[in-house]
Image (cartoon, rainbow, N blue to C red):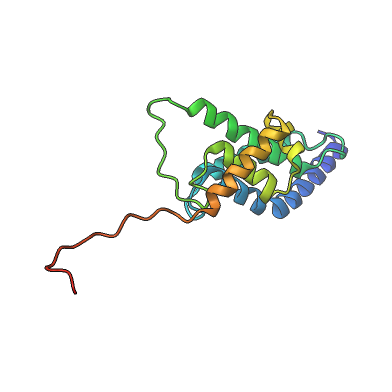
Length: 167
């Protein structure tokens, strides 16, 4: 390996390290929201992040008009969607109960909420990424926000019969 190539590899590694130090926390948070895991115990989200960063590094030298954060986010979202689809109905793929902030939402609702509300993508960009119509993204997002706006259901209080009712 020549000196010029070694220098280029070192520069590439430094640029990528700088990108990761700035973007990994936000991407991990997005992955944790997608997986609806507890932020302190999120192995699935960490796996999604690792795969997204590896994919981004593999294509790091593409023309600079392609934003690396956008590439990592796209890979994270599509990987999540694909894995959710393939996991549906398969025996032996049990996951712990969802406990994260978006646990009450379906995976598709979580995708739309994370992309549009957390990451700030326009509905048309989210629709293109997810292969849905813009109207469908709006409907899914509206339903998700309505679900998140409702207070959680609590069990009815127990009624104890301890004698005659007060008069």
